[in-house]
Length: 392
Image (cartoon, rainbow, N blue to C red; front, side, top):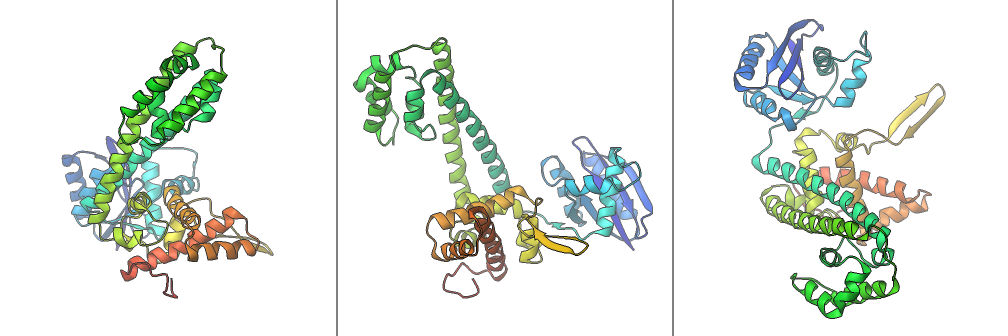
């Protein structure tokens, strides 16, 4: 007999419901998220008669300890996506009601009735990559907001300088940590501006940057009300942006070292367009390719497999709106990079789709879907990408 267990994971107290083959509830209880509570829960699972499969709606994050304990005890784990739990819960009586026991029962029913992807144990390298990738994503998102705020403030008091500087680069940020307003730049002059920029190592294009700043400062003579406090805030944002760039660069170096230790790192990076960051993000999303029985399953997880739409006599296909957005971004960005770097195979495929009448985004999505098959095949066969091989 098969026992299907659904766990609604939480930070303090999980809720678990187990059902048998016929859908009868055989276990319904709270589980404390501590060693004693989980040991007691494991004993309760072992007391059930039958093969136990446990479904979790959260992977990693606050469910990592629960996940590690169950995997160490030898239980089979599967992932039930949160959106699937939400929509399946609407099918039960009183579907608008929300509670942990109801969600756990829904997860158990999904485990019983659906074919879900397994949760497999990850090594230290994969865990470290996943943590580094998550931290890098947080830093880049904060950096995007920070630079947008900086540009908005600078445009309000000195629009000429905002147009002249690319604040995503290190040199302009170094300049803005001290000189912001037109009067400050004019008073500093060419000599002091160069001296300030040369204090930072490995800056390129200092002469051109100074010339652009001085030209913009000589053009604007008016002082905007509130200029000084705005300039002070811009200096703080520029300093924070420089610090974030340093942290992101350090994480990128760490990812390079982790990928060198990962058995799939070199294989994935052999595919044109898959740099170190995209390779790390792919490993963080997928874990091990053994979770996916086919390339179609991997494409479905990434939201790159077309979805059938049929009603009466009408039938067709549409673009999928679900899937792992982070994994989908990896394939889309790698396709974009491959086309941009003039990879011959990718460019030929892209051009063929454009000749078939697809617009730019459709052609890139089609290329991303093709690359799913290529990566899955490479990892299954343990072979690096070979552009001369017909199967590629």
